[in-house]
Image 1 (cartoon, rainbow, N blue to C red):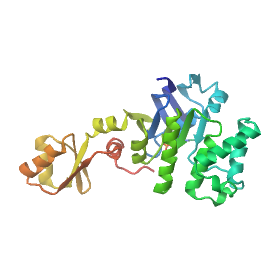
Image 2 (image 1 turned 90 degrees about the horizontal axis):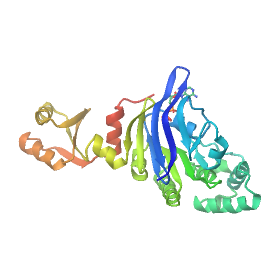
Image 3 (image 1 turned 180 degrees about the horizontal axis):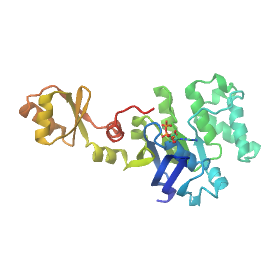
Image 4 (image 1 turned 180 degrees about the vertical axis):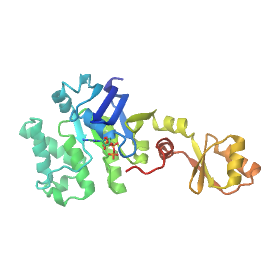
Length: 302
Ligand SMILES: Nc1ncnc2c1ncn2[C@@H]1O[C@H](COP(=O)(O)OP(=O)(O)OP(=O)(O)O)[C@@H](O)[C@H]1O
């Protein structure tokens, strides 16, 4: 596998604030890679350095073997970007938005027209071709931004919160398109607050907090490593906690509930029934959300 992005001790500061704190990671060609983390973790700042629009403070960041500090033009020509905000031109039609963008890459007019038709079909907006962009739904606007990011046939696609605020149908359509792009060899890097999205889509992920990378791995490895494969939930009561302490079980109290982390839920539920006389509980597979909350805490970030 060839690395497409390699970051070594990558750091970004804004005056006294350390937004990205000496992180290192490597993303392989054809991977779908996710950046997770609470608000302010440093994800967007990392994406902006990858996009060559925010200079690196120190460390190194190479994309397709080129340093972001001195190969911006070449790197940008190989990359497509779906930014967090909808920055389409609202006074243009859907078609015009894509055609205007194609000029930035000096794509000859006829070729651009052909490509735009293809892309409209790809994101299912052909019937909206002549619609004014401002009258599109939120889901359609996101699809148009995705199409715009693909105008230059990028080998690397960066998406910052690609499905934020979308309904389930719109999210599924975007996921489906991303999988198709990946199948065609495009490396996809995304940030998301939707943990189910990252769990379903990504081959590997990192969880960031306070500018640092806390974990890295495939969703299933990360889940097994940090919470075990299953969770038994029971009502919080002192007798239960005493019983769990006696067994030295791994658990966490979350308000009125206790989460017991385990690779063998049956062993725990048998223990609760037989040794602790507790019969009200439920077992479920662990998710990335459990890992996230365990690692980054449950306090709401501003
Ligand atoms: N241009 C800037 N000037 C000063 N501080 C900044 C700037 N951009 C980001 N920051 C700060 O850097 C830190 C990391 O922000 P960043 O936007 O990268 O986080 P994030 O993980 O993308 O958060 P979110 O999930 O809310 O998008 C935050 O404390 C933020 O306030």
